[in-house]
Length: 61
Image (tube, helix red, strand yellow):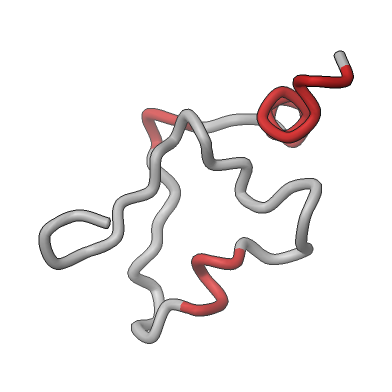
């Protein structure tokens, strides 16, 4: 959480791939259309899955 806003860490964000069908941040944000994909951090579904595995299953690799 930042000063008055939440900040998404692109190194840890999997866009909820591996967890949910829709990114949770977009689902729970009280203001529509405020969470936009950062064009500097575009990742394929495969890259997001790889990140999910590294973040949540590193002990099993």
